[in-house]
Image 1: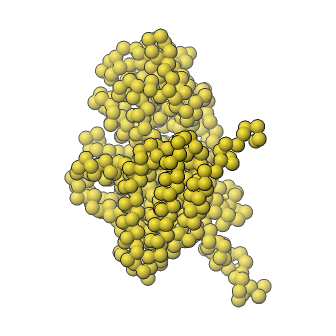
Image 2: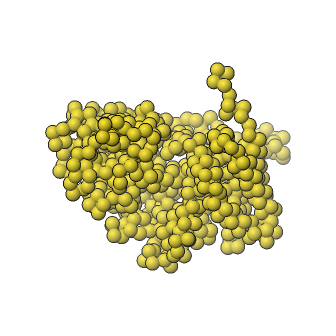
Image 3: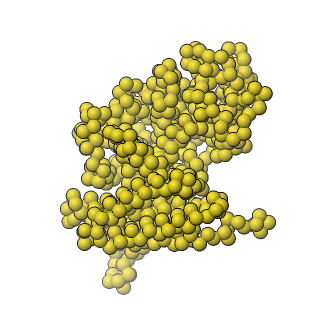
Length: 604
């Protein structure tokens, strides 16, 4: 079985985003819709046969640390080996580095199958490909050959090592240090010492090697670490060094999570010097990527890719939960209609999908899940626009719009995909919170996503503080033009004209709220309710994408088809039940309410 709606995926790719046009660009000229469909077909089959089959087993048999190595169930390695053999790790990389050179849009749709089937196992792929892509972008040819190519082949896996126990998301406060240790064919070499926390994939018995991308500070001449982020550099630190010896990296412990349990999550100590002493000395050997002091700027490429991937995982889990609760609601008999047969206690019980409240919850799930997936695929299409741009101006526009939408793409699916999974449990009733049905685990898995790769609050500050207020709304104007283009299409269709009016009203309220915040002298005051703003802004963005989909439905599909009618109804549901919530949130933010944000600490 497929854990996604393949009809919906085809609609999003071809009827809405017109993925076929990408084959007209030289980079993708060797592909066609047939090759795209073949990739998606094999992805769905492999996800069902190798990833989904150990979904529960990996949850019930968490990784264990045997004192030296973290061990996971063998099915995870078997699934990742099969994925590597089909080219999943290499799918959207350039052919020069062994990639299949697929569009990011198609690769994202492919990855959605694996994330829906088993997000914990799929996480190894996501981290590894983002790691290798950063190395390909900023590494030297020798670093790419040594560290990136084995990851693209799927033989090695990769991580990102940012957080520390005392610093969390406050990367300015990291204390891992990197002391110069000469140079060799792989570039400037350093000895790293310090601890990194919450490292997904930090150790495992799956791959031949692990490449850690580590943020650390190079001390000044006095041995002191510079305060702030300016002194942060980036290093490739392999578990096994090129000469085959173990690096000075030790697993200090495992974090036991409520979800994603098949993904190992470690506290790593670099430079302990007690178990492994490469070249006879303490200190984990790492190779600097890029210039000294540029580490955080370089790492943002991987961080932003991971943020969109987290949103994809949240959307995929929302779709899976919706499909499973829909199937359950169609089969589960309970109660009788409120009219007609309800007067006869001997009448046959009816499937719960016939109850109005169940239909309400199902339609809300559909609007959240399919809206979230559309948002992520649109961002993937923007990445392809960056790649295929014919002028610097065209590329800059795609980059700016993608930057604006990235915090939304990370947070909105994580917030409302989880809301969809909550409804899926509710529809299952008492069975929903038992381990007999998948929706309980799906919810636990998805609950991690509002925290992964920066919390909702961090994404809100990024959106409002950096992408809108600091950048003087330049990217916002690009988004406004896109929204107006959709509204103009919809207003010429009698079936959608009223929704065009509502979309323009919602956007006007967003812009009015931004104007209020931009007029404040104190930037901190503008960010007090940034999280509320992000939720409302995300609702307007998803409303726009729903209306744009609806325009594609009315232009390209037969409205007598139940799929088309369902799409239009979900769009209308979102505008009628959800968009008004954004209007309330904007009003709250524009009021400059400080009841919570400036509450005295002694009043808690």
